[in-house]
Image (cartoon, helix red, strand yellow):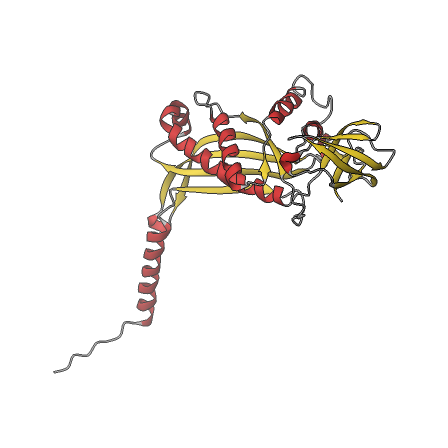
Length: 320
């Protein structure tokens, strides 16, 4: 005795296949990752090839701001400390001289009493302070937002509303040779949490502190990778901070790799040009002379002028 099986109608088969696909999409689409990082940024300078000069780059981390209402925990200090630690691990060719911090701090404080539009722009003030301290770049950062957000995820009847703790951080890196931004990014980290609204975040700062701290640690690690990429592509520049006859003093020394006998080219890039929103930038100038390193200390060097009567304080140097 044989049993015959009638095939399903074509339309019914398509319906069943569609239901199976929706079921799979709901199962996998409805599952969310516990924490995610999203980045919104603008690359403001072109990528530069690695110069191969063998010298290390220098960076200072300026004061980190906390622009949120959460003040019981020093989140800004944690972000600055973690940026320093992760940069040292991720980018060993970058030095962060401790003495430079006070110069950068003083430069930023000099801007605070002035009204809008008064005095030099922030980027130029930071560049001038960085040149004096022998820095190639200055990083500033801020904790922008700590908040609860709700998002619908999934498909059709498998949709669910999930609550996330969102932490946003802004980061800007200034090139001291030009005053331009090497990097200008806002990055956010989201962690899924249970039944939390905006008011609860403020009331539960102590309870949410571990999650916020974990988010800041991960954001700092991501930021360090981005900063390292930019600095490894940035050509080294040193700066003349004093001249007496044929003797020049540079704000870079043995720590970054300068040695007696090294030949230098000198450029006049002390002129500025106006940019958007009241900013000013140093213009790359022409070569005006040459010098040779005669003596070095850890963070400064002396050089003997070989040519260039026009050389003055504020000029930049690079290896010949």
